[in-house]
Image (cartoon, rainbow, N blue to C red; front, side):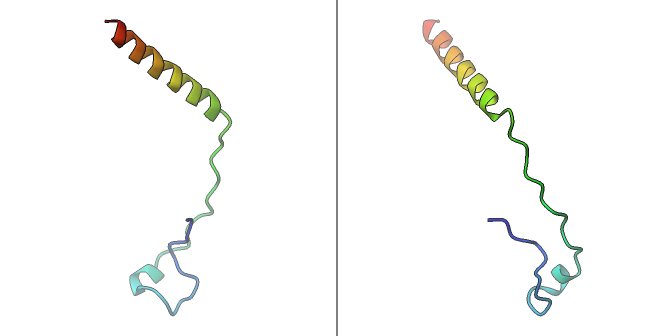
Length: 55
């Protein structure tokens, strides 16, 4: 749920919250290498668990 901190209706909300500046636009994070990170994390988790099993 992505909701703005500052309400658009000036009659609603807390007075201190109405004084805050409008938040900057949220940029979506780039997710180009998520597959590689998941692969490496899974591989290392398997390697560590298998290695500790052999010890």
